[in-house]
Length: 193
Image 1 (cartoon, rainbow, N blue to C red):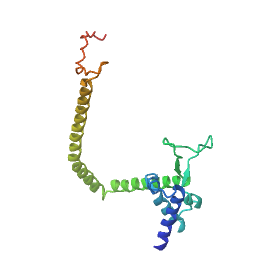
Image 2 (image 1 turned 120 degrees about the vertical axis):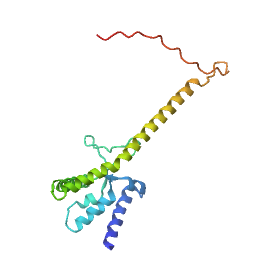
Image 3 (image 1 turned 30 degrees about the vertical axis):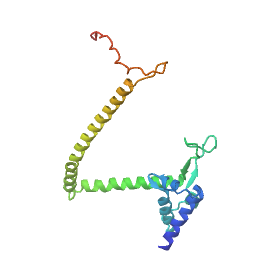
Image 4 (image 1 turned 90 degrees about the vertical axis):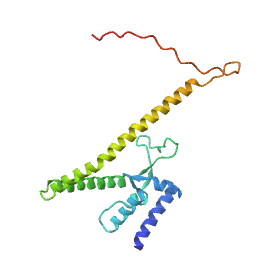
């Protein structure tokens, strides 16, 4: 247990060195939706027992400045800050882990679906899940319809209020609210040939 704490502490030190102790940046940076600190700790542990051989450079400096390959210049965010990326070796390793995990899920699912002993259990469970989800889907549909209608009514109300707002003329006096615009004359539609 003591070694695990050391790994966590050393990874925290890496983040602090790179981000100047900005814990918000540490918490925000993720690779494939996994916090970088968790990935670095897992890979460090995996290296320690010989399961993987992720470079110490990648684990020691998991966050890097993004460099434009053509100009060799530092890239900046829309906010004007230097862009920070996860080291390519770590990103690639997590991508491989994720792909392996997905392949394992697909394999295990298929083994349950195609096994004569469990196929009927799967079908029954799937049917029960669909049945349990129907009231939620119906409720969400009603909530969505009502929310859109409410939003649209608020937009129409705001547009009418804006159109009826009083405006000051050149003398500084308030004028009457704008009247309804004259409607366009009716147009005759010609049949489409």
